[in-house]
Image (cartoon, rainbow, N blue to C red):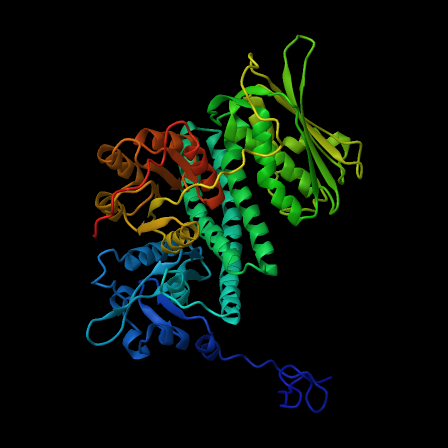
Length: 600
């Protein structure tokens, strides 16, 4: 039989049989035409960061001419706006492009302000972009070109400014929500891929750290830095997701997916950062005398939405009298939340998870607090009970949210329990028979500490509106914080650099300052020290909000003068709980109305 040599016809279409029934030869697509027709603005750079190609969408978005771009250095063609003293587009994009050249990996940037020339008079137009820089590699893995893809999000940023946009109709709001969701989902996938890269890097560095202490210190620095880089996009995703929920009060099917996946990514990031320290006993505790009932109540309150989304019932049984322990409130809440999350994952829809706290004694007379989390889920082979607490081990058959997991939740539970002088055990009668996890912690020597017997945290008393200064160099995150706080009735000022934040604090009084730490000019700790030296005592509370969340970072923040250190991504609900606690504290805060704010 002769080989097929047909070329296809219009009737048959590409790849269809020709008149004689023979399979035609595939037509090679015109890649230049495909690139030019791509709706996303794209620009191609060589390894020297010179522009070698650009598509029509990019020319339209930047209002430029192809003949004026080809062959020019990127930052010669697109300089910073000289009229904007805070312009950092060249610096941020340059850092991202150099990172791609050095690592050979894509780099996803946070939303950036990067103004474009708007005419022959030297005028620039304010523009905001969502950029991704992807490498093109040769056969040896060397970066030969970089594809710079952007999306123009100027309209989204501007419409979030108070008084900058008319109230859109319902159709316009849905259209904006869909565009926002598309961008959020794309960023969620990119952050999830970054989490996987973090896992692989963490495993490699752990092996090296077993040999030399220097390797361990290098790993800690690496994880802290990567944590910061991961938490920034997560913070933006969470804040914008909250805004999206406010703009769609009737709900949207995509919102539940977004919230569920974002919660899963945050939990994976937290587990990765805590696992190594918990497993090696290097997790530091901040001990205090506390009522374990209140810790469990807080964890239950925070995880109930996850149970509701996944159609699981959560039952709580707490004793009527306080159960005092000497422990770390944050870590014990994390331990409880991990057990409850594990129960949700391995219980089918309609199933039940129960958490029971009760005091118990031992033959030697030492009292213990026993927390048991049991479920009627899929269970496990009793012979594998001990292996469930090993890193990166997962029981088969997870059916709940975040079922993929990393297998770090239970190892962290064991690490926290043992650091508190306790134990944890798992039990199941086999597949299909459910499972239970029992944590035993020593109770405190004295049981005189008061506590609440309710199964919910102290009810949130509405706090008064505050004057708040936000110091954050991530533009889209700062805009989202402003919008959410203003919805609460707060009066918000945003500064994108440390110097601008210090000037704002000097020009007007504030009840609260929320400050990032890794600012481009003045570090957040230096800001806190300067503010503490100039602000009246008790007048203003300072809160560090950062992706750097290790114990040493929190201790350094306290020494610098911050009243609290909150991790990114910051939930506004968590911030409100902190502020309500301060309002109800014995020390009066806020102190009352300010004198009239001067014009500045």
